[in-house]
Length: 294
Image (cartoon, rainbow, N blue to C red):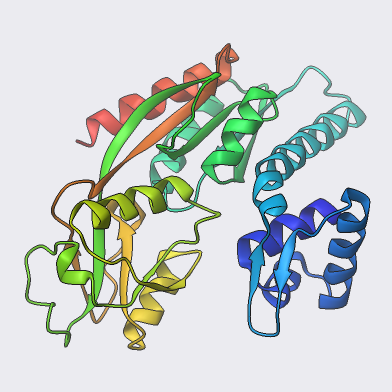
């Protein structure tokens, strides 16, 4: 419970939303965090009446928490298989980061099941940095994430290069533009993904603004494109996402690509240095399907 509570609060940055996500009461989640902090001897979160933020300790431990939970789920799945008398079944944990092309994964998984009917496939949402930790410890078999700084110890292949896209209200002065530059957005409040979920994307977006000499003003974050679109429609600001995450045209909004240096990001398929055959098969399926869609 402690690790699940830590990950949920770290991703939601809100104890109430984390409790709802875990189907627990907020006091239960708060107590779990306190127990974990006491056992570690340090604070995981900065907490005030208005905001929750990860401490340096929390930032450092979040990838390990994701990897530990992935290992636990694999253990549970293995245990269920053995208890049911199907101990020969293997398990492939497939992690995917927020904002990656989930539709691509959905198209490939049925083909993998046909090729490996004895394999139990366990999809799991997980930030890219946590995927790297989990792959190095063999807690997951394959990950889909975003290009980030250090990918040593794993194999990385580019699935696609995705453009950053702005979600702009139809009535906004910038809505008539065919493209938008970072400098044109420098005075606008932006809504985008949380850094702890997609640090690679955040760093890439920051680079685009830095190169242009523009200010990046993120006024709010949201875990999904639908949430970002809702805030934009409500007049909070302009949303930023990536092309692959847009599975529909948000009503009442214009989707405008960003132009200029560093306004694209590479979506990666990640495997361990010595991946199992099932992970290699899924990687090849993903690469082949992505190439066909170009």
